[in-house]
Length: 326
Image 1 (cartoon, rainbow, N blue to C red):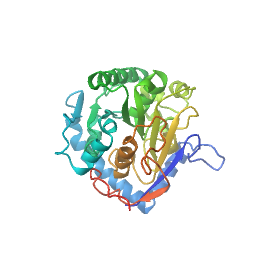
Image 2: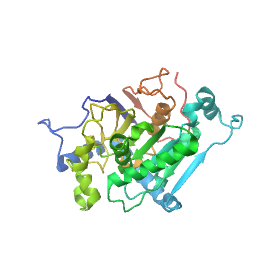
Image 3: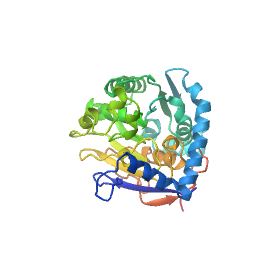
């Protein structure tokens, strides 16, 4: 399946609009999904989404076991590692050993990151943590405070002052609140969000409770997140897709804030649930986390530099190391 990737750096607007220049409403958002779906890439993406969701349902019960799980590479020997793993560990031990925390979305658990976690391990990252927050979470602010406790625990156990966080869907919004409103930027070097409703989703009107009210466009919580965030130290990498059936309109999963250092990456033909499984995403995250500059600029040529390109490997095994560029 050919999967298109486009990138934009804030504050450039890369959000679908209507002819009047306004973001689309609910019907317009559904129309954009239908338009994206009725393409060869969109149809292939929908089939892949159904496949991944089926596999995820099979692993879902396993993700309920325990509040957290940790993969930690112990010791300093590298001879037992694969060439890719050994390469990162030798080239930049700090990048390889900086902890990565994965935060799942609504009504989900850490099993959604089975493929992404394995992909990061295969690419040489030495400590990856996955956590479960309560399924019945009703307040993003409270969840962000609990996330802060987890980050402090990891920092205390590892000795690393700053870590990386990857959040899928609601998990990305919880992490963003922690970083920008609770001082978490002192602890989080990079925050990656996958299909996160940064400006809300009309789908939140389908159910009425305290959490979904926070997820509606224009909610008090989203207005709070839009406030100034001066001197934020965290860099943001934001993936969103025109085939996202959960974030409506789809462009609301892009992040535009004049105080934040953001790379927005648009995907074509990737469903909401497929984002943590897609090989292009796994490779993109791995490349971005393989260096530790504070500004988000490219340290090594070709690393974490998101350029306009077309990738035709989305249907390959996302845990496999990518072929070297020529």
